[in-house]
Image (cartoon, rainbow, N blue to C red; front, side, top):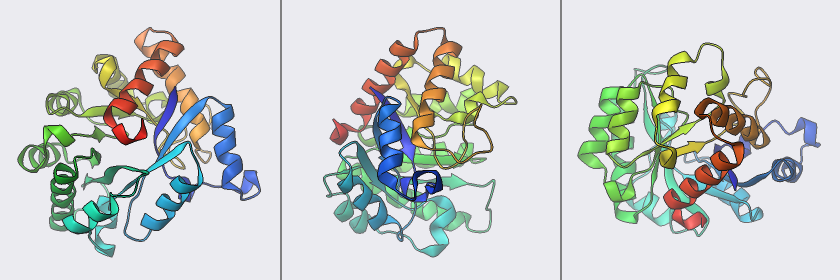
Length: 258
């Protein structure tokens, strides 16, 4: 089963679908996408992602505060555990560290990430991790506050093989997006060749980062097909094998989605 393991359905450009999310979901299903994980990024959109997951059988969700949204409010450990009791919530996050776009609130980012890691350990749910230009601190906080039993995924991975290897050693998965298809993503493609096949996920991160040949357009879950196609060719395996393996990986990691 092909799965879009990370998308933001509440942020899609639905103008081509008569502003009807159902039509976008149907388009993904018709393209062969069997499940989607709609990812929470703030206290504000928690209700939106859970409502979308409730509406569609093929959609699950996560709840959390993105590192670039920490200024708008942090969740507590108790909050996250309580909200995670929802049957369609399969993970906490996305949380993590982003020093590329913001270095003004690093302490808040750290505090929020630690809260997510510790809540995930208590709830026994995986963590969806956003990391950019914060390799050392991301790994160190996972080591000091995370749990291998609630290890999750470094989503939309764009970092080095060294960081990927450290995350894999901590029981994390690595997820690749349409960035893999970008002309200048040479180092990332080398990383994608090395990650064990049983630890890889594919995603769109839609509405952002549409893969080639749709780069520059609004991304959507059906385009995870292009990510899977590209990754299969890069790895020298059949598309069917790549889809079967990444689907199995998704269900192994996000057990509630099984």
